[in-house]
Amino acid sequence: MGTAIDYQKVMTEIVYINLPGPQEPTPGMSGGELLHGFLAELRTGSDAAQRAFIDSLCVKWNVRYREGK
Image (cartoon, rainbow, N blue to C red):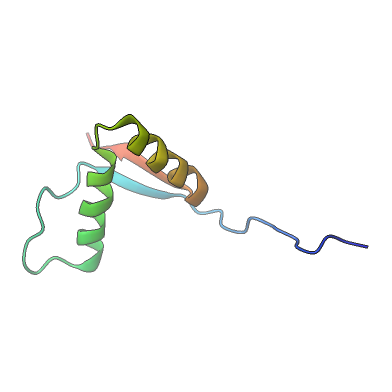
């Protein structure tokens, strides 16, 4: 008899968050711009435990941060 739950990872896309993000929210920003700023700011935390948690979420959800040139 097979297992009760069959798991297959179907999400193969990688999401890239370009750094730096917007510094402050401004009126008229789109939802994507607000989310970009929020996610970019999460990455700037100085607490090692917080960064480790964010990194573990990034691995789970195929999210990568990349520095702008």
